[in-house]
Amino acid sequence: MTESEDLFMLFSGDRIVPDSLPEWTFMTNHAHVLFCVVQEPEIRLRDVAERVGITERAVQRIVTELEESGYITRQRSGRRNVYRVHDNLPLRHPMVKHRCVGDLLQLIVPEAVTPHVFFLLTRGFPLTAFGGAQP
Image (tube, rainbow, N blue to C red; front, top):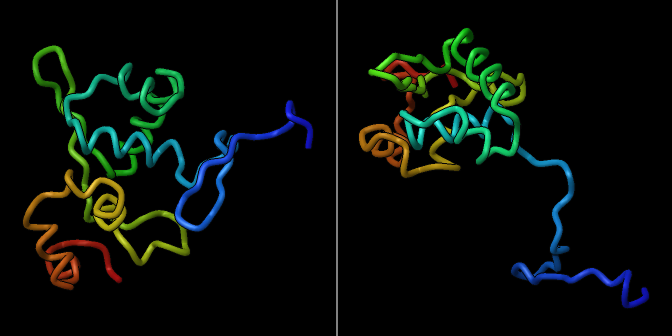
């Protein structure tokens, strides 16, 4: 490799990782939007768009799809919307539908999971006993 072709490499544990990430990610934009609203229920869609890196129009479409599917509810509070994530619903892909949204949230944004749900998850209690998704 010539110097101009040389990529700056970062060490991550025992692996070498290029400093620029590929164009794809492991999570969908729907998941990223969900992470934003669970962390900040009164967030503006403009701010979600900026954090996720998509247009505000795309965020509006995703929020509408999440709401129509029952994964979030939107309630007006003055001039703002307040979003509530229904973390007991199952994930949508057939490979992971045995897990619920709360499981994903606990993995990615554990600080956003309510204390009683966190207690139950960490103690091995199935959420099905409390209205969660079937395993």
